Length: 320
Image 1 (cartoon, one colour):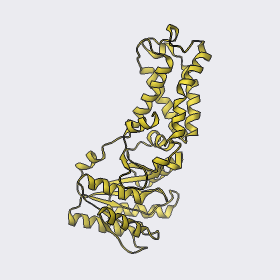
Image 2 (cartoon, one colour):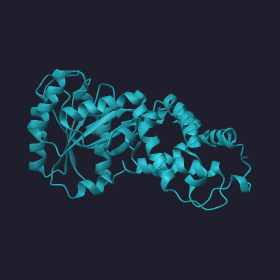
Image 3 (tube, one colour):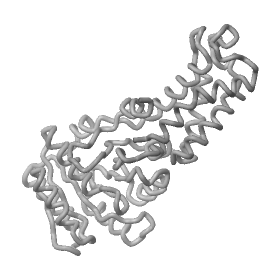
Image 4 (cartoon, one colour):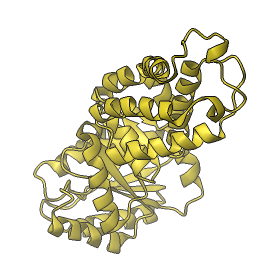
């Protein structure tokens, strides 16, 4: 998991040592000539930072991190350099690597949210509409969310709103049976907005906490299907709209989630297939370029292979 990105981050010390020596002839042995004063900007030139960043940017691009995310990272890092005060006696390599870690962690932390705490105070039933392109793992993700909520003491009902795909209704019904959650469904080809409406009414009558609304996977460029999704939103007025994205799509997911956000407004994101994402760029791209919470990370097919997004978990995975 994230092998390519982890490999690139590990090279930072080497980049610093090389660029420091090329720039000023200072050795990287940690002696007095390689010590920073009380503020890093007084001893570490912007030229060195820029040289290191150029190398790191290449590593990030090869890990499928979107260019605009890299530019945001660059800006954040420069601000951190300007504001950072460090102790005497630290080598440039150690300080700059620490800066990179802290800058990355701070950005990821902004996308972290306690999902359960957030929904506790919301009026019941909480309706959540799940959207995303074909093959993103949306249906399995809905089942995982339902199981997560059930494990934490909340009741829910699922709306089988993907009425366009043959077998989709059966698929979500099987999930519902396995986890013990009621699935509201109509016939194949039915109006998905009507399915969602019936599910909400059922939840009200039975005093269920959540309504989880499945929708047909659709390309963000398909105008007709996107209009259908707008109809579901208009009929149900969901509490949250969660975009579900395949992390294997790399930095292309930025365009996907932005297009969905323009059409219906996205509350937050869930990234799937994280366990088989060799490059790791999708998470960083979403964290930097999309100003929305990352609610969960999906891994594997089992219902419990599902984690609330935590910045420290990702940092540990990247620097393990």
